[in-house]
Amino acid sequence: MKQKIVLATGNQGKVKEMADVLADFGFEVIAQTDLNIESPEETGLTFVENALLKARHASRIAGLPAIADDSGLVVKALAGAPGLYSARYAGVDDDTADAQNRAKLLSELTNVTQTERQAKFVSCIVMLQHEADPSPIIAEGECIGEIALAEKGNNGFGYDSVFFSPEVNCTFAELETEQKKKISHRAKALSVLKNKLTIIGG
Image 1 (cartoon, rainbow, N blue to C red):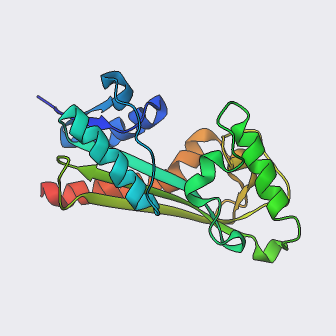
Image 2 (image 1 turned 90 degrees about the vertical axis):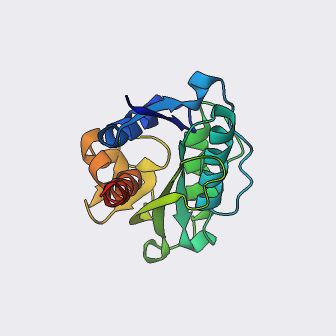
């Protein structure tokens, strides 16, 4: 019988991603929304802190092991912004948020040259055996790139159309979904998580 683990999100795409990785290690992933658990306020100052906060909250209410992730875009010329506030950078929280976030980002970088537009996507995944787990598994992944001068590509979401990756010589929004999944920051973090679970499992 598989061990249930609660995922601190209601995003079904993330549930599937996590389920694909954790199934091999005997876990059955359940979204916190299926247990009527609401997300806590994200008061951490780092991606790791916010991921831990979300995982501990879900674990405490569900009484189960928990897993959570926190991710965002970090732009060097903006002192790390939008960072922890990537999803609500423009101050909106509706269907127009992505477009407004990108517009604000490009506006903030109007006078910044191409060589100074370094950026990275960051993903941090944490896994707890219980709420008070003193030794959580922490897995991080990064994609290094730069912010394009203008949007390009129609695939993806969030900042994909302005994030240019030298690795593939295009923006993330110009990639096919399956190709992006192989090189994304979350894919890299999931790979680290899988390796750590393999080592623990012996």
